[in-house]
Amino acid sequence: MLVSKSHRRLFKRLALVLVFFFFMGFYSIKAQVAVAEKGTFLFTGVSMDIPGNNKFVFYYGYSPSDNFQALVALPFFKLHKNIQFMPGYMMTKTDGNEIFTNLQHHFLPSLIFNFKLSDRFTLTDRNMYFRLERKNTDAVSFYRNRIGLIYHTKLFKRPADIFLHDAMFWSLDSGKFTRNRVILGTTIKAFKWLSPQFWYVLQNDTGLFPRHQFYLILTVPLENFGVFKKKETTNQ
Image 1 (cartoon, rainbow, N blue to C red):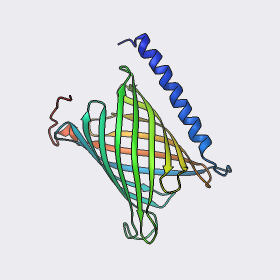
Image 2: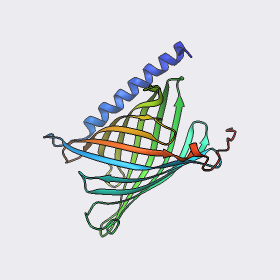
Image 3: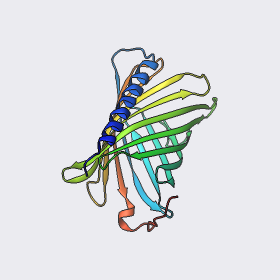
């Protein structure tokens, strides 16, 4: 399907908005610029459809560079054809001892807005209240906004999404921007039993060196094997 002139004009305006957010995010972070650090992360898990046209994903994550392990649970509830609610949760440990002895708890309730601009492009915006609770120290809270553009295409003759996101973190404790993450990645429905994702992330934190991060995320789509038959619902 061809994109109409009105859609093209809307796409250009939204692209300018994204560029504005990317540059604002970069300049809002006063990082000490030096040799950038690097990090590698591997996440493996499953996705499944759940009744009511909803979805659930669960991952185990490991990073050899950051001595990092995680369990991630992300349910997605469809409130409207353009709106999802995600009461996400992540449990992490980074101390190098036995898994999940000294824990950090991440509470990630989010509203996600998705607007399909055409058959090829989707605009997405995730609004998150991010609360981090740690042992023997005060909890911290953030507002996180991740705006992005998704391009729907094919890679190696398989359905794929190529995406560019910008995520900005605003500390609700200090009232300042504390982090900016630019994320470039792709998701490929490579096989019935596996959908790999590849991410490159440029992360800037206040008072820290910028970081290059590389993610490999391997998802087994259980919905392809009939786990919880998906029931379509009509959105008003």
